[in-house]
Amino acid sequence: MLDLTGKVAVVTGASRGIGRAVAVMLASRGAHVIAAARGDHAAGTVGDIEGAGRKADAVALEVTDAASIDAMVSGVLARHGRVDILVNNAGITRDQLMLRMKREDWDEVIATNLTPAFVLVQATLKPMIKQRSGRIISISSVVGQTGNAGQANYAASKAGLIGFSKALAREVASRNITVNVVAPGLIETDMTKAITGKAQGDWATQIPLGRLGTTADVAAAVCFLASDEASYITGQVLAVNGGMYM
Image (cartoon, rainbow, N blue to C red):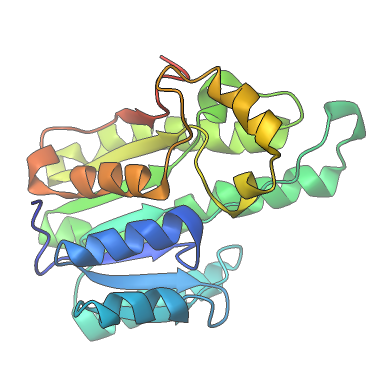
């Protein structure tokens, strides 16, 4: 089993779905997880982690507020002295066809899905450079690789994470910091539960493995990239999509 004992991992959007699964699995591998979400929404995630005998802190974070990010990171450094793993996961959708998409729908998605990765990396990069180690992992999407009608804003934000990560990987590799992306396909989450059985069946026909993915599938990929076993992997996109896009 991948061993992350002694590592401090910050996970944004950790209250549900992929973020919650990532936080729980990182903790199960020995990391002390900082579960970040709005208000007290990460409390349930931390309860699950501590109930399993692992370590986690719930922190309030508004990812669109740079001051909130700086305060969160400062608090983590004051308490733990380091940040070893950063998982940029927080994200939203505001789907609409281009001719009907409002400017605020575009701005809100970019401000939530893409810009916080920049702010979080700037806040955590100095301690990672000082300790000469770090793992930065961003959660993109198959839509960021293929595009999807009605999701120009979402696709742009997720493709932006890929370009951002590749550029950053080149900048920090000499400091023993790796930067990678996990790009999930169609995953069973609260959002996909709203899709009807027929629609899910239609989607499944596009997936060679014939099923939707699980949040645990994505979390396992994140844990691998966060581990020492992935120390020679950087600037890469790990697709977790059942073959939906190759």
